[in-house]
Amino acid sequence: MQALSDISFDLVLALGGPLSLCHDANLAIGEFHRVTRPGGYVVCDTANRYRAALDLVRENEASQLTSVLDTGRFLRRDGLVDHRFDPQKLTDLFAANGWAVVHVAGICPLFEYLPTAEQVRLLDDEQL
Image (tube, rainbow, N blue to C red; front, side, top):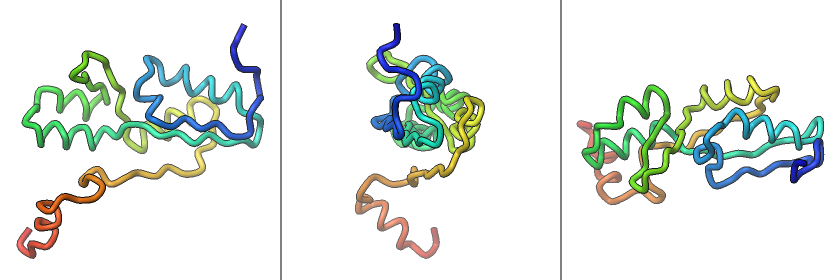
């Protein structure tokens, strides 16, 4: 027996990066599809593979760089594996599971929120 009934929700909110944390994103998106009513929506956020790559470079941890960029696979310091996405991979994943993708929004992977003083300085440097 499943915890949630089929076609139960008009809106599914999957926030906090659940696709990045689950073992099988296809299975998770299939569950979104199963429990969402026709015409309903899913709002989902995931970890960004480009941001992960930038963080690895910043931390001088290039050993995972190729894996993150090529596959999205990221081994965290606590030993867990995250799956990082880019906009196209995320769109393809939802489309392959029966969804019509309405909008994909990316957050700029170059800056923290709010940018650091060093990042602002670099942006203000005309030569760069």
